[in-house]
Image 1 (cartoon, rainbow, N blue to C red):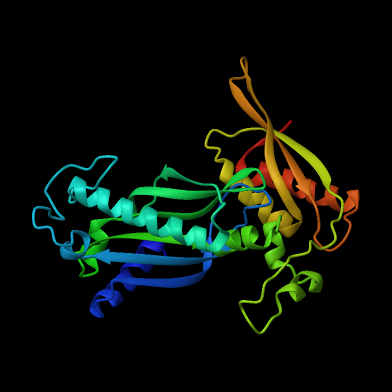
Image 2: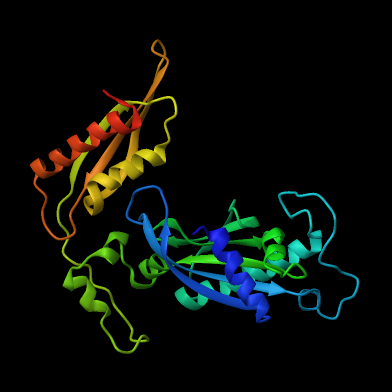
Length: 298
């Protein structure tokens, strides 16, 4: 089920009960994305919606209205007045920033990054400074009015957000590798076995095993999509793939072809990998690049 369909279904239910705000949890959220210690192809997400009537968004004011027959711009939707978009953005960012401060403390570094989502416009991501890098923890935006209209809530406006729970836990407990949330290692799981959910947790990293690194270089097919390569590597290597990143992008002036060289970092969470084990998997990846993607190994 797509996020758009899920939002429509829950909005319809919320509208029938005249709920101004609700959250729901999903465990079957998938993505094809970069591969590193903060990305995983499946994750758990909490999604929330806040709806407003005209009197709630503009309390005590009669000179503002929610809607107009205007034009869509980077700042607003066609059906929203500019003041509607501004008030919604202000309320959204204030609420979600307070949530982040509640979770992580007042000393966090946070920033908003403009982006695009299929069910909101305008849209933003909140990033938190984590281990010296900016880490996305939520996506949000002003709900597309068409979704509200189709859900029977066309007289209201609202904003929505989605929180990646594993990302939040990484920051809260200082967990460096997102793959550990799918580990059966008792050294990891036992640290979260408490009857009281408010029990403070000081996470202690489990044993680290050495990395194995192999590079793969190939001529790109005409319709090459990098996410297809990432998905292929993940399908074959599974959880022993720790990172994949490009180390060379080369265009041959005579052949008129482009090649990429990727570094694949292998590491098992529960044992030491032999180079032979890694080489066998790496050969499978090379064969799949040729057969499934149409690449040519260099």
